Image (cartoon, rainbow, N blue to C red; front, side, top):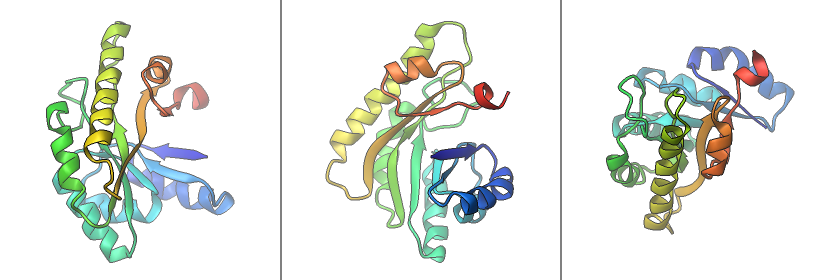
Length: 180
């Protein structure tokens, strides 16, 4: 079972107790991560889905080294083009994966994106399709690297998860539909 939080502070409050009750629980950070919060994040999260820069990945690698562990991540790609969203530019995604793959404590398990909140389903589909295509290219390009798996395509939320699944998502975020 997987559970996620947007903010490190919320993860710190909730995840330790939840993991104590269910040791097989996998805890994810899905919100934007600042470098000064990496150490705290690695103490409570099993997967960071929002790595969008080499600088952030380098800090994760550094803190993982100090903790004596590996860090599992997804690279966040901004397929929506929206200014307010985080993520690497789609044109830079493969180059970022290549640079992060050089770090010794990081395992890249896939990619993540968020579609815009719009009524036009074609726009949403295009965002998800683009991420799938980037993932497919990355899987081919980095095949054989032990720390690049491309097993997860994290995209789709309560409003658009059906389209995400149609476009190949194997990790969706259902929050409001459950907790609202």
